[in-house]
Length: 235
Ligand SMILES: Cc1cc2nc3c(=O)[nH]c(=O)nc-3n(C[C@H](O)[C@H](O)[C@H](O)COP(=O)(O)O)c2cc1C
Image 1 (cartoon, protein in one colour):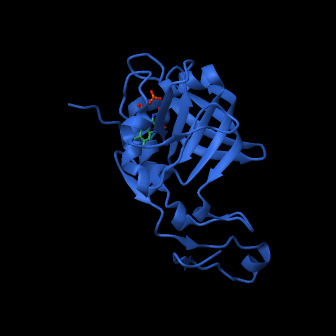
Image 2 (image 1 turned 135 degrees about the horizontal axis):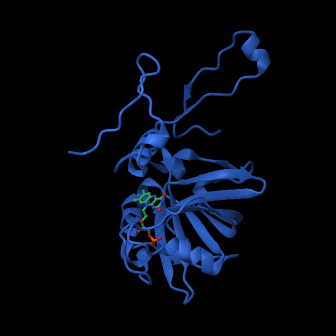
Image 3 (image 1 turned 60 degrees about the vertical axis):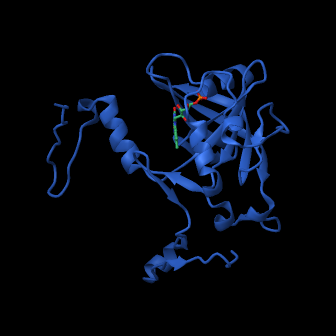
C-alpha cells in the first residue's frame, strides 16, 4: 500500500502539510498541482560539437526585466546523468527559450522524449532550427516568440536539481504577435499554452483584463471589473 501523508488540521475546511514530513515526490505533487498554470519554455541549446538539443521546462518564469532574467529549473535524472540542457548550458554558456503556442504543442511533447545525447529533437518533432543572432543556440522558427539568453548564474539548490538563470540578449517575435508602435503583445496571436499538474495543459484563450486599482480608487470603493478581451480587440 502506498504511504499516505498525514495532514495537519489547523483550521476548519483546510488540509495542511508540514513540508518537513513530506517526501520529495509528495512535495512535487502539491507544488505542480497547485502552482498553475506554469508557462512552458522549449529550450534550445547546442553541445560542444554543435549538435542541437531541445527540451520543454515548466519550472520556468520571467524573474526580472532589468536585467532581463529568465529562469528554468532543471532536474537531474533519477539514474544520475545530467539532462542534456543543463550540460549544454554549462558547456556553451548560452540557451534560447522558445515560447510554446498551441500550434507547436504536440511537437514540444516530442522534444520531451528522453532521447540519447546528441539526438536533434527538433528534427524528430518536425520543427525548424534557425541560427541564433547573439548566442550559438538556435531558435525555433515555428515558435511565436524566442529569447536568446546568455548564462547568468546557476543556483545549486540541492542534489536533485539546479536553477539556471539566463540574461536575455535578443528577442525574436513573430510579426503578427506584436504591435511595434507600442510593443504590446497580442495574447491571441501568441496563443501560449500553460502546464497544469500531471499531464494537464491549458490554453490562454479565455482572456480578460482586470486593471490594478490605485489607492484612491480603492478608497472610493471603485472595485475594478473583469472585462473579457475579444480576439479582434486591440490593447
Ligand atoms: C510540459 C513539460 C514540462 C517539463 N518541465 C520540466 C522542468 O521544469 N524541469 C525538468 O527537469 N524537466 C521537465 N520536463 C521533462 C524534460 O523535458 C525531459 O526530461 C527532457 O527529456 C529533458 O531533455 P534533455 O535531456 O534534452 O535536456 C518537462 C516535460 C514536459 C513535457
